[in-house]
Amino acid sequence: MSKKNALYCQSGGVTAVINATACGVIEAARKSGEIGTVFGAKNGIIGVLREELVDTAQHSDEDIAALRHTPGGAFGSCRFKLKDLEAQKAEYARLIEVFKAHDIGYFLYNGGGDSSDTAYKVSKMAKEHGLDVTCIGVPKTIDNDLPVTDTCPGFGTTAKYIATSMMEASLDVESMAESSTKVFIMEVMGRHAGWIAAAGGLAGKSHDEPPQIILFPEIPFDQTAFLERVKWSVDNHGYCSIVVSEGVRNPEGKFLADAGTKDAFGHAQLGGVAAVIAQLVRSELGYKYHYAISDYLQRSARHLASKTDLEQAYAVGEKAIELALEGRNSTMPVIKRLQDNPYEWEIAVAELKDMANVEKMLPRDYITEDGFGITEACRTYMQPLIQGEAYPPFESNGLPKYVRLSQNLTEQKLPKFEV
Image 1 (cartoon, rainbow, N blue to C red):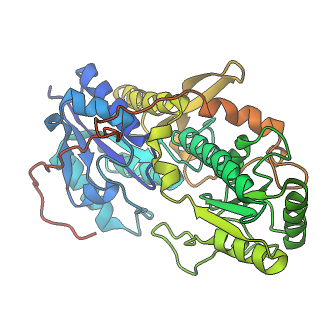
Image 2 (spheres, rainbow, N blue to C red):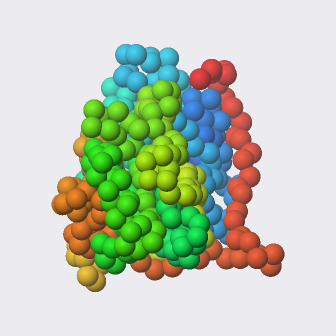
């Protein structure tokens, strides 16, 4: 009996360690001896619909191993959400055709909440049409907002980068505050959940250390209280460092940085809240400011990866193949915390239906009573996730040595399909 093939997709915003998950998937599949070909879909589910598949047999063991320390998405990602089966019959029919044409027996979808929804819908589609395809979701997201799992692969490295950047920039602004800049603002991602913003709080060990202010999506923005806190910090410390989440809202629930547009998943397109906060500080308090938008840097900073994060990212890839070979359809490997100190974890299994379209918010008891900082409970949760260093190898020119996989596509067997 011929071996079934596996199809692996990367979806949504990539992370500094999503390729480590890809490495775990491909290496585990090769070691198993039970899977024929491992295909990588070019640009996620869009590549499946277009039948643009990369046969990973063309990549050496050394190149696959190098994915462990390479940021970005090796096969390309996408923001494309499948609707219900009835609403997109042509797309689901195309998936069936592609799966059959390339003898796909295992479908692995590596992404966040919206991607979990896609994987779940594909699993239902396969079941309804009698396809022998095992669908496995594989977790990733720097937002850390997936339910069930203790943490999301990708978050630990982002948290380490944000905390380090805030620590370093605060030392800079403190040095200049006497005669120049008094306020530094760093904007981070997080549309609804403030996990990344909270990570900035790890830069300081006490309430008065930078960042003196964190603005969370979970806490409505109080302009008066905010300005009073900025002034207090400048009066007492000479400067003020601020972390602001892109998803901060006013008391009426409107995003401070709503651009009025939507992304491909239907979410409000955000960005620029740091400028809004900066102008408020300038107009109301007269302080000179600088701000930075961490944007892609916070999710691509592989040079400062958390060892814990890297190990977990690889482990969920390995486990995904194990679940696939066991026929555990519509499931996802997740991280289960066993204890805080010393930190211990293991891989558990969750149902995709429990992961799809559910956002895990930052708990209120992780935020200080005044709404501007993190509590010890938050610190206890986050500290282990940024532990350990996992530097990439460096070239003789002083830059990291990253791999770019060849993208030669396998021969197409079906007519073209427009997405």
